[in-house]
Length: 224
Length: 345
Image (tube, rainbow over all chains, first blue to last red; front, side, top):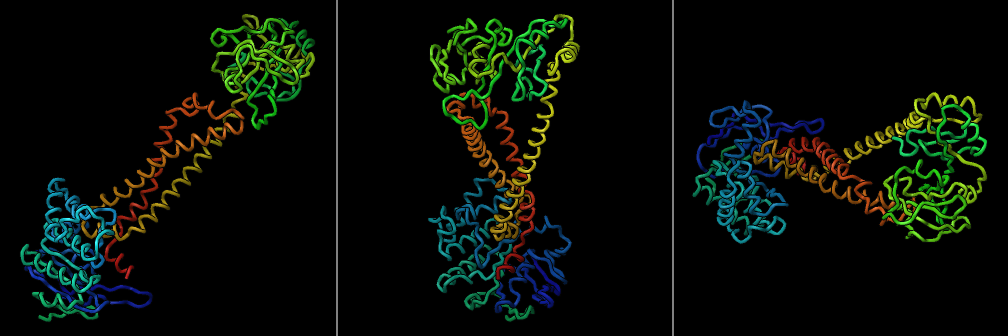
């Protein structure tokens, strides 16, 4: 999957003033790399990921998905791309509280109309991969923060996406657990050949990332 | 429509208040004089004077809604008023002479007070013997004590007075023509034909129907607003969940169905609980207002609240809940992760 942004800009109106969260960003993902976007809170990381993940619309500029202009895609097409080709990991995990770990991982497959048996087998396998083979039937409130983020990562992998978009995946975790989650994302990137874009201010990710961008006041800059 | 006095003209005092075939108030008729004047009119067949009294006032029980009645009928005219109604189990007999203290009673009264054939009861200081229990589904007669006319007149201190005289026209004569003649020739009476009696109940039924529709509309709107408000709150509390579904690429129809499924489930549960508790509440209220023991309503539960009505109510509740879920469901499909997260941080 190839994602390219051209002069991507997103502005918000906050009372009388206008805030430019993302300012003329040119950015490209065309390989299964681990990309880190580093910046302080409020620098525009999450906004950029929401735009790249087709969860939001830019104020100006373009996003191209495999050379197709995303602004011309219908809402349904954008959903399909999110469902089948992208996986999302959020800072606050965003697991559905009434579902068990297993059901949370099955959910994207269910939305993709995969057979029930395949959903169950794959969800079990994914949860075993992230080290939660014994926590299948626990609900989110019965899991630790680290475990919840593992479930979220397993859920993001459910439909075998070409890219995982992780917004501050270690933001809520202690340093030991954060290290484990980073290792897990690194493993996924290397073994599954899945591109991973991580927005973070965690230095540990910087150590393993293939490409590092910094973002400040909405402006993106390639560091290495 | 006429349960009682079918095919007969009903003569009442001019100022009597009549609901269908039941005089619920107003003046009385001097029995002998009125009956004699009526019988002199050409075309008048059999006449039957009746004293209809409500309530009967058993013991010290207070009855906010009159549900017990007494009817005094001349013993030789039982059949012309009660038709072919038999006595329960064919046990006992109708009172045999006008001066006897024998009465027959409705089955509901008998069940309520555990009265059987042979039981002696006291009403207004008079000792009466029950000689039969009416085997009928007519609600009025089920709650009635039927006694000889003379006894009723003594018991309720209406000497030589009745409040109804029923008249069967001779063959070939219309009820309308005979009723007109009676009203012209007998002072201070109204002669009501079967059609007129039905017409009298129509405005009452129409008013009941109007109230019914009004109450149903108010309940419908209140339920709709309530379900909508509760669901909007529920969706709003879970906006992050719906936004997550959206971010994961869930089709709009899926999110919509989730909300509608939830509200219809509320409808199913609410419908079942509502029917159970609503029916019980209705029976308890009926029991309180009529002093009829609650247990007596249960054997006829499905006649009071027919299963078809229950099904109708159940479906209406589910429909209202589904309808109330539409706007919240549309709201749920509009939850976007970017906006939700932006609002949270």
